[in-house]
Image 1 (cartoon, each protein chain N blue to C red):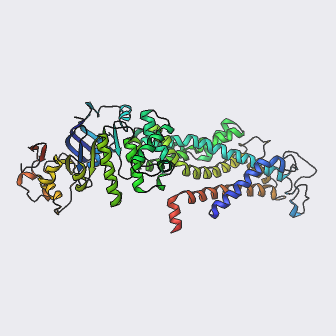
Image 2: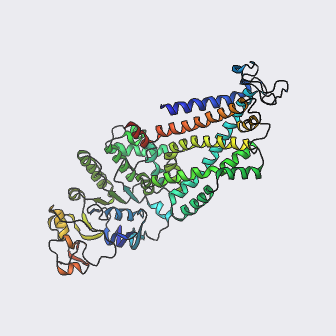
Image 3: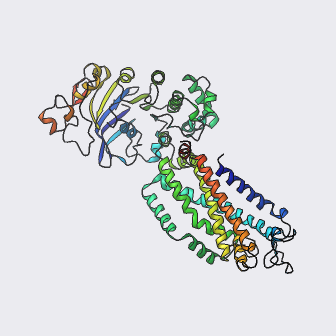
Length: 276
Length: 302
């Protein structure tokens, strides 16, 4: 296992553990306000152990909020990535396998779609849809399915020329069986890599939407909204903004490491280059 | 007549891969399609399955198989024929097997599709076929992935797949070129044995005249997409008529390269390399003439 992959796996596992165990790990309700204990510093800066990472301006426990936010991040990352893959992969397969007019039409749709700035599209969608976890996932999927379609199409264009595809046609298999049974299994390594990278993007977009107030409901803690709240008292309590940012950065880097590490491990071309 | 090909022309965009080719294949007959790389022999083989790779297109001609013209058939009708009636043994056995699946799964696709067998039944049929082909532990081979088998084993698997549904026409596209010499001999012996057992008519694509001499009844020589000569194998080997065939059979060196056809030829495609070139060779494409029993030549000499 290469070091990138190891780093990615460790971060990913920690994140999933935090998300799964948040209710049991957290000292208190992430939304419980305590106006007698606002903006408490973390323990290493003279805070008390009942709020290990301090509190925000409403006296809510930052550690609890950080861990609960991991749930949103994981759900959004997995949900949005799965849906984007489920939509984008068939489009890429059909486009790359049939080529010709089908390909032209599908890829022009993808081009137009991709030419709209992603962040702008996501914000516009959320403004129309309203806030909420499912809507965040929907917005990310609508913005990012094209990435899967594009990359899968490219790979299928190369795969379809392989002799085993011709051999399958020569025994009488039809196009959709060839796509599903011959091509798709050969795309799995690529899909895994794409999915890890996509998860990093999904987490980032979710944080961004929550930051501008168009993400998950206000009652659900999210790194994005925590950063936005912390921004207000940055000068008197820098930890309120810095800690969620740190969590976000580590998560995004972790998914990227996972994707890069998997790519190096699964892509034979890169593997031989690394060996050289 | 099992197969009748008439005036077959295949184009890849501008490039003419096969021009006006015609030949026939009787029940149980083995035809050798011979030519150097790029002569269009693989394209002819693909055309018989209507699987000319893009951007190739069959622009004219007729391919009559069992009295039915294949060219107007729909994709669904063709799929029912492919693998069941007309089978292909591909050139590179490693590339022709899907790396993601065990042999047992992909080798039973044709049986499942055309014979309605379950995977388990298909594996049974396959195991018997592989055993007959000299694979010592067929059940084990079926559990393996393509890269875990040797080249000869992989080619045996592909031959077994081709024979599995009892086709009446077999297209063998240089089935031994990617193998080492000893394995080649084994595979050829195996193919010859299976062929005479089943009596399947075969189109054997090769550039190896040694194979032609051993396996085929008749030979068709392709040069730059044109069928320059066809005759019974003994005739071709003993008394070749076309200067190109003569050079081939006697292993004579030829200057220059085979041209690539761009349009309907207005000259003999072989003229600039031909030792017996005449004035007419550069101005007219030679028509096909019958010069003996089942012996046709396209050359101005005759």
